[in-house]
Image (tube, rainbow, N blue to C red; front, side):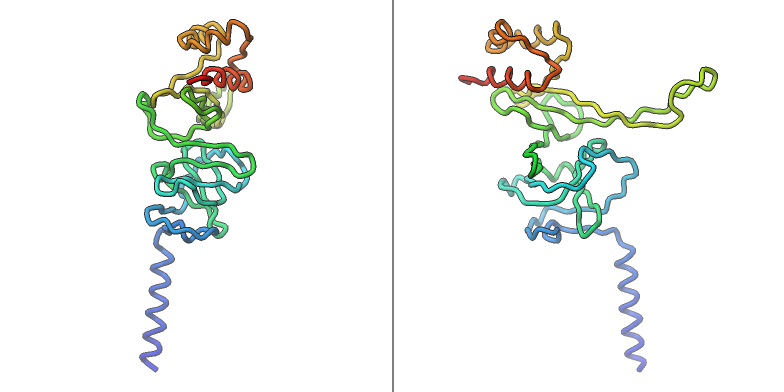
Length: 224
């Protein structure tokens, strides 16, 4: 009887210890069976987040050792540049260092993780719009804006808010260059590229319009 009670106490103690530890799981414990020894997920502990997609979506995740990718349900946190995984109704996160990129299954929107040579920030995910020698990237960003309420004037916001921002970049030889939105600056910028200069002579380009940029980059990549 004493041995039986002792065993029960040991089981109870072990359960408490496990329950108190911070859960870390490997990718083979995801809904989709896959074995990745180096890929760990941690319990989401961030308070401030802002998602590119508000609902969980099917996606394919890519790593260096798995170029074909593996399926998972994810949310992309553009504020912290992290990918959230749905694991047994619980949100888990993976460091951007461990993921090369991902593609949303339904929309086929592709995101690649990069640290460009001239990028002074940590690794982030860019949406790949046009690929080639000249790659068109879209950077989705969430920016925190502090409260700017003026009690005397009774203007501004009393609380902090998050504003989304999208910026287009040209990727070439491992470096990124911000695409100007103002026409004069954009014409000067693309004037350094022979194909682009020829294209702009015969086509009107709205440098804020993605469709126009896609056509421009497509022309730039012709024959390269």
